[in-house]
Amino acid sequence: MISGKIVVGIILLIAVITGVYMFAVLGKTPVNTVRVIDNPNENSGTTRNIGGNVIEITSSGFSPKTLTIKKGETVTWINKDTESHWPASATHPTHTVYPGSDIKKCETAEESNIFDTCRGLNPGESYSFTFNEIGSWSYHDHIVANLFGKVIVE
Image (tube, rainbow, N blue to C red; front, side, top):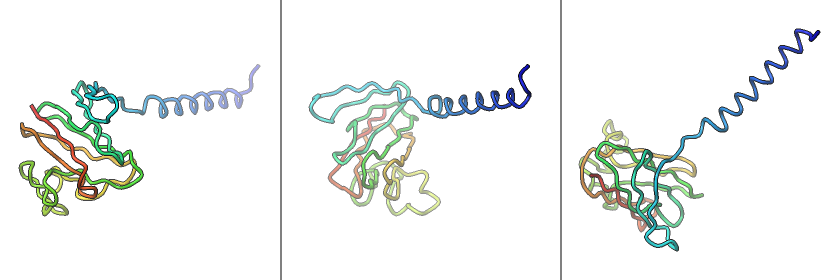
C-alpha cells in the first residue's frame, strides 16, 4: 500500500508540472497577423490585421513599416532592440499629427488619450494605442527621429 505522504508528493509534483506547462505554453499571447513583404530583402511590408496588431521596434526601425487596421482597433509596439525607443505621432518634435495628440500633454491627465508613449520604451517593453480616427497616421521614434512608420485606419 502507498503511504499518504507519497500520494501527496505525487499530487504536488503533478500540480507543479501542470503550473509550469500552463505558464510556459498557455501564458503566451499569439500574434495573428499576416505579413505581406514588398521586398523580401528589406524589413518593409504591410501587415493586415487578422486578430493582433503588433509592430516591432528594432535598431533598423519599425516592422512592419505600414499597418492597416479598422477604426477602434488597438496597435501594440514592442521594443525588440537593446536601446530605448519612443513611438509617437508625427511630426517631430511636437507629436501633433494624430487628432488630440501633443507632446505637451505628456505627464498630464490627457496622456492616456494621446498617440505618444511620453517616454522611451526600454528593451522588452510595449505600448498600446487604440485608433478611433479614420485616416493615414504617420509616426516616428522621438529618440531616433529618422525612424518612421504609418498606421492606416479604415
